[in-house]
Amino acid sequence: MAIAPGARPGVRILKAHGDPFEAEMAEGGEAPTNPEHLAVLNRLFYASTVDLGGLVEVQGTLYVCTRSGWRLAPRA
Image (cartoon, rainbow, N blue to C red):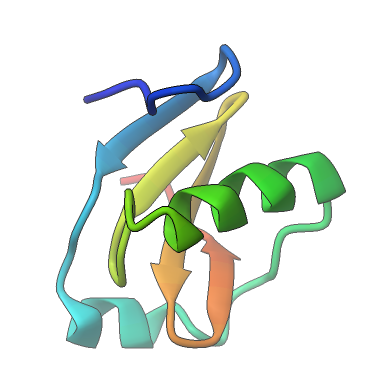
């Protein structure tokens, strides 16, 4: 688990790259509703810090990066 460079406290990259096919299963999930979380997530993606299938936790909420955008990820 890594803390993203320049990220705010409470942001952890749990997996920077994942399986795009696994991420495809999450595409129908709920999109982030917190605009601050979405801004952090998008910044990580556009900086190439996280790619498809990546898992990021922002202030206790887990997100997965999909081709359809960020989605809430189920806790294992």
